[in-house]
Amino acid sequence: MMFAWRSLPFVKAIESEFAGYSRGTLRRDVLAGLTVGAVALPLALAFGVASGADAAAGVVTAIIAGVVIALFGGAAFQISGPTGAMSAILIGLSARYGLAGVWAASLMAGVFLLLLGLFRFGRYIAFIPTPVITGFTSGIALIIAIGQIDEVLGVPAPHAEGALGALWAFIAHPPAPDVRALALALIVAASMILLPKLTKAVPGSLVGIALATLVSAAAGWDVKSIGSIPSTILLDSRLSFGSIPWANMGDLLLPAISIAALAAIESLLCASVGATMTGQPIDSNQELIGQGIGNIIIPFFGGVPATAAIARTSVGIKSGGQTRVVSLVHAVVLLLSALVLGQVIGKIPVAALGGVLMVTAWRMNEWEALRFFAKARIKHALIGVIVTMLATVALDLTQAILIGISISALIYLRQSARSLEVSVEPVDPERLRARGVKLGAKSDQIAVMYLTGPIFFGSVTMMMDALRQSHSQGVMILSMRGVPLIDVMGVQALERVVHEQRAHGGDVFLSGVQPNVHEMLGRTGLLKELGENHLFWSADLAIAAACGQYQTA
View 1: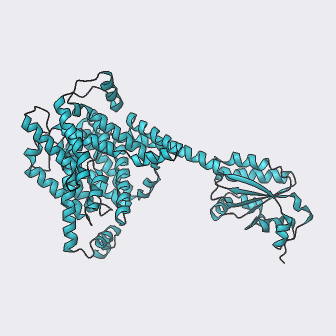
View 2: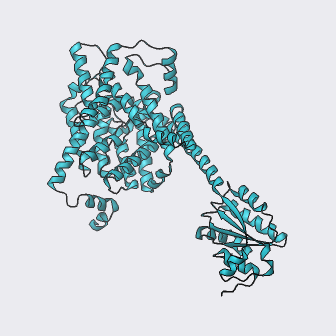
View 3: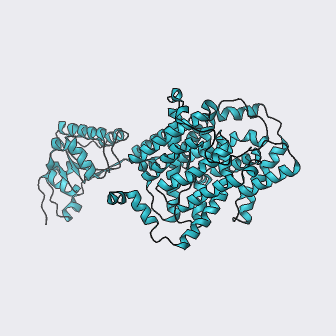
């Protein structure tokens, strides 16, 4: 039994990760964990509030995720917790169904993630095009920024449906800002922007929040604050089996799918970035299993859905972290902060957290990718980004991803269809004689068509038009060495070509057929109809066979 357990890939990966673990490695992991904890604390507080819960829920989420997901995840360097992208989904869900709805959706999302990992769907996340990822990341950044306008300005949140409705409400009826709240948010934003230019030893967000809290307390400003932080990770307000809203589970299905989709995408993208930075391998399916287990457990402690966080993961890597001990240490730091500094944390102004989220939203945008698409004038990529971004802001995240993928797929199909090239070349007797091919009298009735590109439903019309324009009434040799794949419509199109040629007394030979294409032609019966003696590796052999007198010198 012990042998069977140790033979599991996950157990082997853990053993490999800690092989040769030393005091030096432990010291580096602990120092990296302390650094990540300092970075994660203000983000956990901010994302907890931004998710429609409270700061305590954000801290609990970071602690549980930092332990559970780290233990069961597939990437040694990964740090998970509440994120800005996830809060953009949760704020609307919380407004509609309350925290009970958020917890129930998180539970279902955890189950979906677990199933995705168990059924090994991790590799398919990589099929989502970069413009789609960039677009919904930018859309989420907009949702976060719009959602913090009221906190930064110190005004009541508008009664509007969705991010666009809230933005329009602020534009149509500009509120008079509370100068105190705005000043506190600006202090934090300035610290996050300016401090890294001087030193990266201390997180700008942590310094900014500390300064804003000190200014607010010293000036005696009566501004909205976080409130008391419970000295426990088992919050009074949490999910229990008896409080699951079974009547609303059908309505929560799509939000749960959105949460699972975002958690899968963000976690595996983060793992991919971390793998590039460290050179360490990742197990995508095990990472999904870890994310699933974590998100199943977190609601029962009162937390919000978690996912891997690129910012915290990169900090851990750059700080010299080697193993998942970094995540465990970061969780301990957050736990001690909540237990020891709970009263101090409760006095942090909410406007200060708004400043953190505003800067975070700006940094979330993949500006480098956007500049690349614009500079290279890649129109289809820019279209995918814009459409996905607008759909993310206006619609559900799952719908936005599906729309973005659909747009990208249509653009790809159009480009693939246009990539098929058909060139016609007459037989060159002198060249063929030099290569040992003796031609018959009918060699002038043979035309060689060179096909390059995929033959599928999007390109068959172009192929048929090009072949018919050749006006070849004799033997047509289709050189298909440059054809990587063919679908059913492509086979049917070739079948029509064969029938039309033979109806006029001509014939069709194929050359250079690739294995994948050969298999498809065999499965559909076209090879049998054409005849194996009409299939050759090179166009020269096909020409000689068409003439009926192939000889070598």
